[in-house]
Image (cartoon, rainbow, N blue to C red; front, side, top):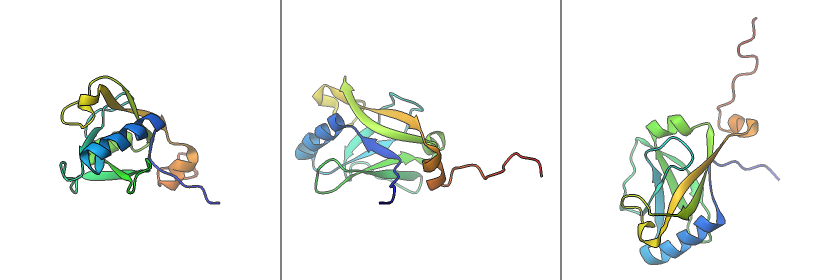
Length: 136
């Protein structure tokens, strides 16, 4: 079986909350427009409430046990900070930011991250060229 690579994942706790919130608000999506590290807060919106455009990058889809996956986007400027990083969306106690749908639940979504592995870097075209930096 071939290895599959993704830039974004979700914890079981966040997936459970997303299923509950989808029942209340309909289909959801995420957008990460600020923050540079672990603990940043991705915003979760009902589909259509936040419009993505050409300056947004789709990181991937979250399979959380719903009919359709939840899409995750990031602004292209933020993507430059995060492109070597795998992002996992988690949930912790606290108040959600701004208009993010989890705000009233007493929980908030956060980003947990790790550097991409060598295999992931290669898959996403981010691995350094072999022999780079060696004299000819």
